[in-house]
Length: 353
Image (cartoon, rainbow, N blue to C red; front, top):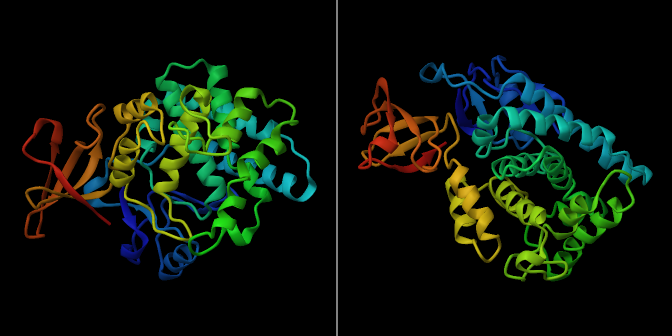
C-alpha cells in the first residue's frame, strides 16, 4: 500500500485501508475503486491522506482487521460518551473503558503494530474523537515500553482518551475558529482542563491517576504550562506522557488554522522541546521507539532517487528500509530494497506526497 495525498489520488486507484468517519463507521472499505465522486467527497470531509494499492508495494499491508475494529468501536463509544455528557449531562464510561481494555490487550500482544502506528497520518474525517484515540494509542505504546502493568496501562489509556473532554464546554466558535485565537479566546480555551476535571471527577470508575491526566495534560515540564503552572515531577507521570502524545498527534493533524506538520518535522519539535515542554525521560523513550517515516510514504534520497518506506529499524528512526523505484531523473526502474542503516552514505532528503 502507498500513502498518498488525496490531491494526488487518481480515478481508478484502489483503496488499501478502510476509512472511518467521525461516528466510527466505515466510510469507504478497503478494496473499493476510487471514483471522482469518492475523491471529491473525501476532500470535502477534510481527509488529506489515504492508502492506495501500488504494484511496487504489494507486500506492505495496512492495519489488520482486529485493530481497525477496536479503533472503530473506540471512536463510536467516545462519540456516545461525549453526546450523553453534552446533551443529557450524564455519563456512562463502561463502553469506553471496555475498548481501552481491548486496546491494551491488543498492543501488549502486538507491539510492532503500535510501533508503526506512531507515524500514521490521518485517514479520518473528524479531529476531536480521533485525536483522543490516537493520543491514547501512542500513550499506551509508550506505557508498554515502560513495562507498565495491565491495570496501569488501562488507567493511562482511560485518562488519555478523556484528556480533551472539557472541550465539550468550550464554545464551537472558539474550537473551530479559522485563525489565531484572541487572548480572551485563548484564556477560555485553557479552561478545558479544569472543565474536563469537573465533568469526570464524579464519574464512577474513574480514578485519581486518570483524573490527573485530564487536569494536567497541558502542564509543561518547565512550569510554564496551565492550569496550575506545575513543573517537573510535580506533574503526574501519566500526565507527562499524555502531554507529549497530545502535542505529537496535534502536530501531525490538519487543523482549521494550519496544515499538518510532516512526521519528521513533528519528531524534531518533540526532541527540541525536551526539558521545556516535555519530560526528558519521556522524550528519550519516544526517540528510541519512534519511526519518523510512515510505511508506504514516498521519499527522496540524497542521491536523487525516489523510494517508498517499506520497513522500520528500531533505534534508527530516520533510517528506515526503503524500496527504490525511480532514478535521479524520475524514470521508473526495476524496484530494489535498501536498508539505510547499512548505507551510511545515503539518507532521506525529504517526503513526497
